Amino acid sequence: MNELSPAEVAVRGFLRETIEAVRLELTFSITVHPGEPTRLEVVFRGRDTLLLTQNEGDLLQALKYFANAVSGFDENATDRVVLSVRD
Image (cartoon, rainbow, N blue to C red):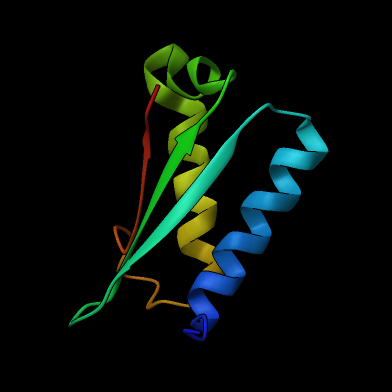
């Protein structure tokens, strides 16, 4: 069994708590793309995915900002956590 990286644990926890607190009907998966730099790709699915993409994707962009902040990655590396939506 693969051990989760600290960044993945932090992002997974943040997203799980946020989705639960806001009561969104969403699930997500995280794929780790190792290398320099390491990148986490988060894909959302579920009934409330439309909410993430409304208003030019403001909610998705906000989640991306905070996911990058909690990841522990270098603060200048704002695109190390990438979020997307699948139907």
